[in-house]
Amino acid sequence: MAVGTALRIVRFNKSDLEDERKQLVDTYFAAYRRFPEYAYSDRREVEEYLHWLFRGDKRGFFVARAGKTIAAWMSVHDSWRGWRGDQREAQGELQELVVAEEFQGQGLGRRLLALAIRHVAFAKRRSIGLYVGEGNEPAKRLYERYGFVVESQWSIWLRMRRPIDPVVDQDLEHVPNDPKV
Image 1: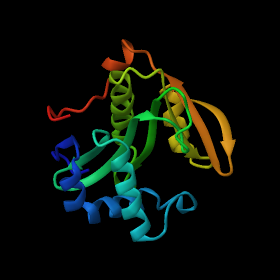
Image 2: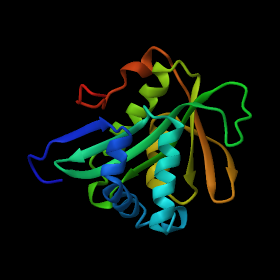
Image 3: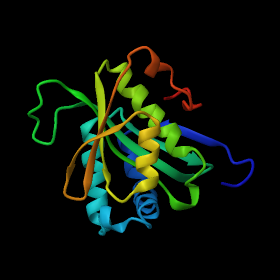
Protein backbone atom coordinates (compact mmCIF):
# COMPACT_ATOMS: atom_id res chain seq x y z
CA MET A 1 0.00 0.00 0.00
CA ALA A 2 1.41 3.39 -0.91
CA VAL A 3 2.53 5.58 1.98
CA GLY A 4 -0.26 7.96 2.94
CA THR A 5 -3.00 5.91 1.27
CA ALA A 6 -5.93 5.77 3.67
CA LEU A 7 -7.49 2.39 4.23
CA ARG A 8 -11.24 2.31 4.76
CA ILE A 9 -13.52 -0.62 5.43
CA VAL A 10 -17.09 -0.15 4.26
CA ARG A 11 -20.22 -2.27 4.15
CA PHE A 12 -21.36 -2.89 0.58
CA ASN A 13 -24.96 -2.83 -0.56
CA LYS A 14 -26.42 -4.41 -3.70
CA SER A 15 -25.71 -1.44 -5.97
CA ASP A 16 -22.10 -1.29 -4.71
CA LEU A 17 -21.77 -4.96 -5.53
CA GLU A 18 -23.00 -4.38 -9.07
CA ASP A 19 -20.91 -1.24 -9.60
CA GLU A 20 -17.70 -2.86 -8.35
CA ARG A 21 -18.21 -6.41 -9.61
CA LYS A 22 -15.19 -6.41 -11.94
CA GLN A 23 -12.84 -5.13 -9.25
CA LEU A 24 -14.24 -7.59 -6.66
CA VAL A 25 -13.59 -10.49 -9.05
CA ASP A 26 -10.09 -9.18 -9.82
CA THR A 27 -9.34 -8.97 -6.09
CA TYR A 28 -10.59 -12.54 -5.63
CA PHE A 29 -8.19 -13.82 -8.30
CA ALA A 30 -5.31 -11.73 -6.91
CA ALA A 31 -5.94 -13.19 -3.45
CA TYR A 32 -5.91 -16.78 -4.67
CA ARG A 33 -2.88 -16.46 -6.94
CA ARG A 34 -0.77 -18.59 -4.54
CA PHE A 35 -3.58 -21.07 -3.82
CA PRO A 36 -5.49 -21.66 -7.08
CA GLU A 37 -6.57 -25.13 -5.95
CA TYR A 38 -9.04 -23.48 -3.55
CA ALA A 39 -10.50 -20.94 -5.96
CA TYR A 40 -13.01 -20.75 -8.75
CA SER A 41 -11.21 -20.36 -12.06
CA ASP A 42 -13.96 -18.80 -14.18
CA ARG A 43 -15.03 -15.13 -13.85
CA ARG A 44 -18.69 -15.96 -14.26
CA GLU A 45 -18.51 -18.51 -11.42
CA VAL A 46 -16.95 -15.87 -9.16
CA GLU A 47 -19.66 -13.35 -10.11
CA GLU A 48 -22.37 -15.90 -9.26
CA TYR A 49 -20.54 -16.70 -6.03
CA LEU A 50 -20.49 -12.98 -5.10
CA HIS A 51 -24.25 -12.79 -5.53
CA TRP A 52 -24.76 -15.96 -3.49
CA LEU A 53 -22.58 -14.54 -0.71
CA PHE A 54 -24.47 -11.24 -0.70
CA ARG A 55 -27.88 -12.92 -0.62
CA GLY A 56 -26.80 -14.92 2.44
CA ASP A 57 -26.39 -11.81 4.64
CA LYS A 58 -26.96 -8.44 3.01
CA ARG A 59 -25.37 -6.66 5.99
CA GLY A 60 -22.30 -8.90 6.05
CA PHE A 61 -20.43 -7.93 2.87
CA PHE A 62 -17.45 -5.67 3.67
CA VAL A 63 -14.78 -4.16 1.45
CA ALA A 64 -11.39 -2.69 2.37
CA ARG A 65 -10.29 0.12 0.07
CA ALA A 66 -6.89 1.68 -0.37
CA GLY A 67 -7.93 4.85 -2.16
CA LYS A 68 -10.16 3.66 -5.01
CA THR A 69 -8.60 0.19 -5.11
CA ILE A 70 -10.35 -2.76 -3.50
CA ALA A 71 -7.56 -4.35 -1.47
CA ALA A 72 -9.68 -6.98 0.31
CA TRP A 73 -13.25 -8.07 0.94
CA MET A 74 -15.18 -10.54 3.02
CA SER A 75 -18.60 -12.05 3.43
CA VAL A 76 -19.83 -13.11 6.86
CA HIS A 77 -23.27 -14.56 7.56
CA ASP A 78 -24.64 -13.98 11.05
CA SER A 79 -27.53 -16.48 10.79
CA TRP A 80 -25.95 -19.48 9.06
CA ARG A 81 -27.82 -22.75 9.41
CA GLY A 82 -25.49 -24.98 7.43
CA TRP A 83 -25.21 -25.84 3.75
CA ARG A 84 -28.51 -27.71 3.83
CA GLY A 85 -30.17 -25.32 6.28
CA ASP A 86 -30.54 -28.16 8.75
CA GLN A 87 -28.77 -26.78 11.81
CA ARG A 88 -31.19 -26.09 14.66
CA GLU A 89 -29.29 -23.12 16.01
CA ALA A 90 -28.07 -20.34 13.75
CA GLN A 91 -24.39 -19.49 14.02
CA GLY A 92 -21.96 -17.13 12.39
CA GLU A 93 -20.07 -18.24 9.30
CA LEU A 94 -17.15 -16.49 7.65
CA GLN A 95 -17.93 -17.45 4.07
CA GLU A 96 -15.01 -15.71 2.37
CA LEU A 97 -12.13 -13.43 3.26
CA VAL A 98 -9.80 -12.39 0.43
CA VAL A 99 -6.86 -10.04 0.51
CA ALA A 100 -5.20 -9.25 -2.82
CA GLU A 101 -1.66 -10.63 -2.88
CA GLU A 102 -0.05 -7.18 -3.08
CA PHE A 103 -1.86 -6.12 0.13
CA GLN A 104 -1.17 -9.26 2.17
CA GLY A 105 0.93 -8.95 5.32
CA GLN A 106 -0.36 -5.45 6.16
CA GLY A 107 -3.02 -6.32 8.72
CA LEU A 108 -6.07 -6.25 6.44
CA GLY A 109 -6.93 -9.87 7.16
CA ARG A 110 -6.76 -9.20 10.92
CA ARG A 111 -9.00 -6.16 10.64
CA LEU A 112 -11.58 -7.95 8.52
CA LEU A 113 -11.53 -11.05 10.72
CA ALA A 114 -12.05 -8.91 13.84
CA LEU A 115 -14.97 -7.23 12.08
CA ALA A 116 -16.47 -10.63 11.15
CA ILE A 117 -16.30 -11.74 14.77
CA ARG A 118 -17.87 -8.46 15.93
CA HIS A 119 -20.62 -8.79 13.31
CA VAL A 120 -21.50 -12.25 14.66
CA ALA A 121 -21.18 -11.17 18.31
CA PHE A 122 -23.67 -8.34 17.78
CA ALA A 123 -26.09 -10.89 16.30
CA LYS A 124 -25.79 -12.77 19.63
CA ARG A 125 -24.53 -16.01 18.11
CA ARG A 126 -22.57 -18.53 20.17
CA SER A 127 -19.91 -19.36 17.60
CA ILE A 128 -18.42 -18.53 14.24
CA GLY A 129 -17.15 -21.13 11.80
CA LEU A 130 -15.27 -21.20 8.52
CA TYR A 131 -13.60 -23.47 6.00
CA VAL A 132 -9.98 -22.96 4.97
CA GLY A 133 -7.84 -24.83 2.47
CA GLU A 134 -5.65 -27.39 4.24
CA GLY A 135 -2.48 -25.98 2.65
CA ASN A 136 -3.24 -22.31 3.20
CA GLU A 137 -0.85 -21.90 6.15
CA PRO A 138 -0.97 -18.08 6.35
CA ALA A 139 -4.77 -18.10 6.67
CA LYS A 140 -4.74 -21.00 9.16
CA ARG A 141 -2.22 -19.15 11.37
CA LEU A 142 -4.38 -16.02 11.30
CA TYR A 143 -7.50 -17.94 12.28
CA GLU A 144 -5.66 -19.80 15.04
CA ARG A 145 -4.37 -16.48 16.48
CA TYR A 146 -8.00 -15.42 16.78
CA GLY A 147 -8.98 -18.60 18.63
CA PHE A 148 -10.28 -20.81 15.83
CA VAL A 149 -9.58 -24.52 16.17
CA VAL A 150 -9.85 -27.29 13.59
CA GLU A 151 -12.98 -29.38 14.15
CA SER A 152 -12.87 -31.64 11.13
CA GLN A 153 -11.71 -32.04 7.55
CA TRP A 154 -13.78 -32.44 4.41
CA SER A 155 -11.73 -33.20 1.29
CA ILE A 156 -9.13 -30.39 0.99
CA TRP A 157 -11.01 -28.15 3.45
CA LEU A 158 -10.45 -27.79 7.18
CA ARG A 159 -13.49 -26.89 9.26
CA MET A 160 -12.58 -24.37 11.97
CA ARG A 161 -14.70 -22.81 14.70
CA ARG A 162 -14.37 -20.51 17.67
CA PRO A 163 -16.82 -19.59 20.41
CA ILE A 164 -18.16 -16.06 20.63
CA ASP A 165 -17.79 -14.13 23.87
CA PRO A 166 -20.71 -11.66 23.70
CA VAL A 167 -18.90 -9.02 25.77
CA VAL A 168 -15.29 -9.27 24.69
CA ASP A 169 -15.89 -9.92 20.99
CA GLN A 170 -17.96 -6.76 20.55
CA ASP A 171 -14.84 -4.75 21.41
CA LEU A 172 -12.14 -6.54 19.41
CA GLU A 173 -9.18 -4.47 18.25
CA HIS A 174 -8.54 -3.73 14.59
CA VAL A 175 -12.06 -2.45 14.07
CA PRO A 176 -12.82 -0.41 10.99
CA ASN A 177 -12.57 3.35 11.04
CA ASP A 178 -15.63 4.00 8.91
CA PRO A 179 -18.79 5.19 10.69
CA LYS A 180 -20.97 3.55 7.98
CA VAL A 181 -19.93 0.13 9.28
